[in-house]
Image (cartoon, rainbow, N blue to C red; front, top):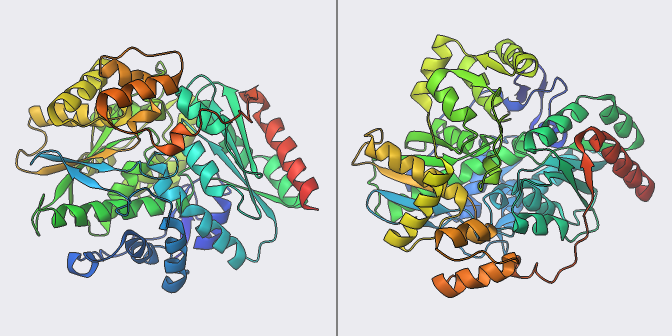
Length: 499
């Protein structure tokens, strides 16, 4: 199967798409066609997570032999998660379950794709007979950065540089990045928000700097979900959730289930949409936003408009106005690379675009949006803990608040089962979690965690606890306009060390 750009007729192999990350025209790669639905519960029900991953991905990455995929998924999912289930699905009532995606190395859902992506990238690089050093350039709103750093740590021939909003992540997320181990990693804060970091990196990918460094022997790539190698492994866990729901009796053999996904960059819910296209019986797909509700507004109006205030919230991974992966969804809605290119140009020039009535009607059939205020989120955290003895992180709480509102409004069928995607361990956000539990936030996030543990009995994951006494390695902060120079300097350093 070939991959094509969302903005032109540029077509590449799967390996090229994995290595390049972003198309030459600035577009994102999508499969040339979606596989015919291929999911049958009877065939899949006894598979482990790694076996399921190899099976699902074999239909998208057809150039990679399935035996090779099995080796890659085995390496990715062996010994890297705290639970053998990888993604436990916990029914809290007849009406809804929580799919826990935070049992990996960095306590966030990004671990599920970023445990596998480095193996896919190294394989693709080898197949392409590419002897250049790869520099992964990644912007993060909080979780991707740490998961990518951990995934690529000390991988031969690959280096990684992560930019994060210096004032836009939780203290623990910042510690996770500033105290990162590894000889091939670099972390830089920026004065600005995630959109500033992501937008500047996209410019770098389209600039002469990319070509200059390639000529010197350093190839730029990405670990954000703009890279198809980050997005496709996310499809797997929606198939897994379906099989778990069948096993625990939450749904019957011919029943569908709804999914509520808290998302800012749209990759996580796009993966659910792709799972539905290849046969997962997903009913309602609900896109949950915080105050930065550009996606919720689109599903209400058909207009994507970033001309609005930007809010820094307690759910920082959703503090995004330019949702990169939405471009792929727009391509599927319109079926036209030309229309996507025009819309992206308009977004750049005017800060908004509107889709046709036909495309909006299709979007309305495919997905619905909703958003939750900070008050809704805080109330959801307290309510779910009191009623179900279940502690949520702020992103998951946004999803629950949206779900609860839509259910009360009758927008979610009363007898259907809904899965809330629990994207991060609550202990990554000690301040807001403590407040929801009626505890006082202490000066040290680690002291706050100990207080929360005393109240809830939930132990601190070792991957968070061990950060407390680790020294900070990366404390540099730059202005967004200096990002390109910072990248050039690191790339030149890589050139020097590899010769």
